[in-house]
Image (tube, rainbow, N blue to C red; front, side):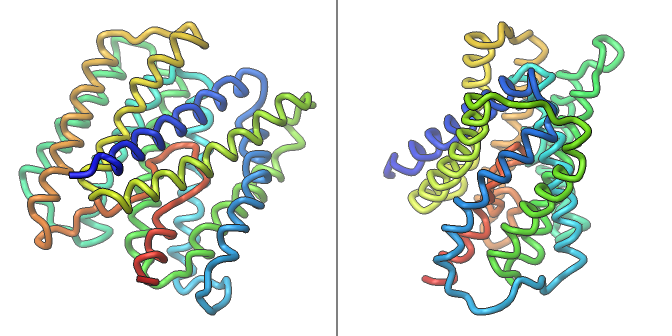
Length: 315
């Protein structure tokens, strides 16, 4: 088996982790609303250039307007919640909460996709969610708005991913990619006047770096999925916990406690088990995790699932 795909995946998630560290650095000075607005603004030219290569004829009116609206709202909420969580919580804790998203994808695929999830995967989901409880330690540790934001990002990110699975084969790539970006731009722009703080050129440049890192990370992740099976690429997202630990120690004076490590271990083990289970079932499973290609419920505005769909259709 070629190691190119896994290496691309590791590189991609390293880029995304760097993206998140820059978000955390800027979040110490600015509201997540301001950060999202400018990152979206800087992302428009990059994504537009990519979409110019799309040859699919049609308009930008969604085939499924209500599902598209629901996904747009979910993506906007998940993005804001993730941005906020990264600014107020240790990086490692945020990632552990976001790692619950694949578990929720499995659980929510039952009502949303009609997926039949057997007892093995259901038990794995429950075990993984217990890992989240280990990290949060309700009653023993003080829970903050940041913890709630991380959980909200995981739930709404999982929901948005499943909506793409539900309508993605019928919607144009441009619709799937541009609507959430326009929503972020309009919603955050409407609120920006209440939280805006003047930014030096260096910090504006930092927001541009975030947009570029999101774009590059998405391209490298696309390359990873083209070089290797989803069962190999998907678990590589858990490497972000290593980068979070390193960046947190070097730049934010953060440590990782035993509860966070234990909870992360439980969540990662259950997530990997579900991926392995879906792979073994093959055609007998709709495989909601291994077929959800985009990065999980994080701050990245660049969604790769629609582009992979377009590539498959072109082939």
